[in-house]
Length: 124
Image 1 (spheres, rainbow, N blue to C red):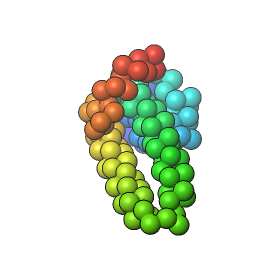
Image 2 (image 1 turned 135 degrees about the horizontal axis):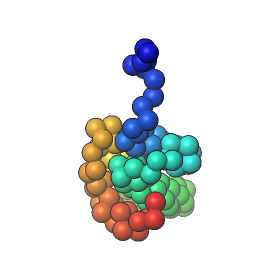
Image 3 (image 1 turned 135 degrees about the vertical axis):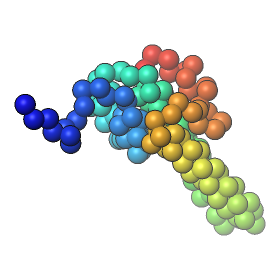
Image 4 (image 1 turned 180 degrees about the vertical axis):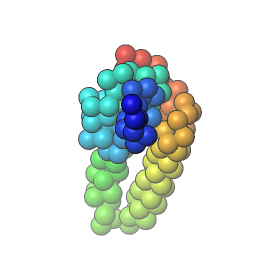
């Protein structure tokens, strides 16, 4: 009997679910419902982190957009602009750290939110 080396393995370690979950909330939904059927430790770990990341980053970005719009024509425009840039850069850096740990198949917590996510969403 011949085996195909390119066929998907039955021993899913959760790495695919972890990677897909980093791509917006739609990626998280796909990862949870389509890829997390084996409920592996790594997949659960990454799903918990990305769920909290998506929630927090969405709230922060919406709040920043409201603040930015409010201060658009005021003398404090530069403050809002600097805060907007700094916050969005921080969000991207946190995302990159988490994404790299998912690619490497590691259970490394995301900066600032990783440990909290593991306790908040322990049911995943």
